[in-house]
Image (cartoon, rainbow, N blue to C red; front, side, top):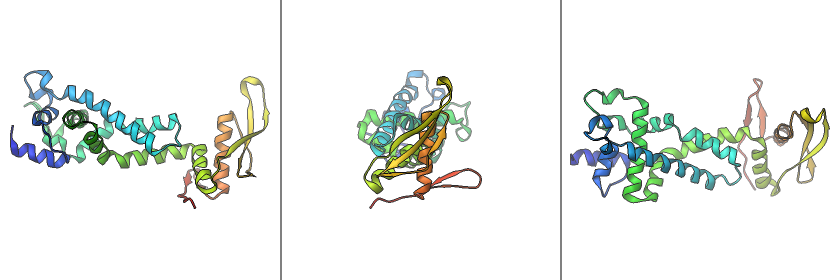
Amino acid sequence: MDNDWIQAVQSILGYEFTDKTLLEQALSHSSAVDQRENSNERLEFLGDAVLGFVICNETFERYPEYEEGEMTKIKSAVVSRRVCAEVADELDLGRLLRVGKGMNALTLPSSVTGAAYEAVIGAIYLDGGFEPANDFVLRSMTNRISNAAASTHQENYKSVLQQVGQKLEGVTPSYVVLDEKGPDHAKCFEICVELNGKRFTPQWGASKKQAEQLAALEALKELDIAYEHVNGAIEIKEFQGE
């Protein structure tokens, strides 16, 4: 192995390997090795699982108010080939990856560089355990988790309102069904939010879930937390607890 190459890669990754062969394997495409088991494919398989767990664990710990569906959306947004390829580009893994003569390191498909990123995660996990692998992932993914959470959370106005209620009032909002119309298979519901003894303007929805979301949005508007632009886009403002 080229020691200068090893040192350069470790500096870029921010991790020093005890077993340097793991790093070499993580950055060896199948086209560059004689036997497929010496390529980075197995490490990619492991790294994909570690990456998924790190993102799920971080999301679970950071957002205790999020429901399963919201956390799943965050994971789907962050744990993807596209994002892995973006991070690989940021780390310049394409230039560092060892490929066969028929491939150009400067024009590698995103699937190849993204796989190399996951392989590096797997290699770090095998070499040093979960903590360094976790740290490596979060250095690149923390902002992406935050961005995905912001996008996902704004779609769930009930979740936003619950956070607002707990931070500003110390209470959890409740949803009161005021009326319902239509046959059993196509009922509409009128629901209002009650927060700290105050009832907000009720809203109709084609289902309880939709009516609750619309009622939560109305409450956020009346609390000056949400603002609807002329194009219909909803902006959720930053808010601080006492």
